[in-house]
Length: 91
Image (cartoon, rainbow, N blue to C red; front, top):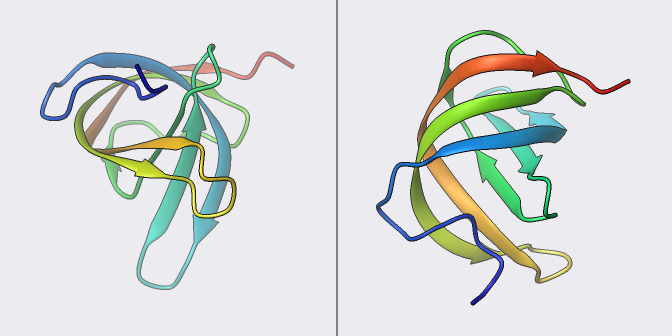
């Protein structure tokens, strides 16, 4: 199986770390990674603020399986993201 975070249309709880946030005037992209190196991204979310390097517990719908634009690694696109808990950074 590919290294995606789960089956499309499922709504798991995920523990992810924010590796990069890209802000544009009309949207913000959040790039995340889990403990196994699997990558995810999403645009909008509900819940508490969190920063790059923070690990969060979230609930989201797996919308698509994509490929990273630059490395062609598996990338899970998630939406309907709700941050359940910000665990902070490991620094």
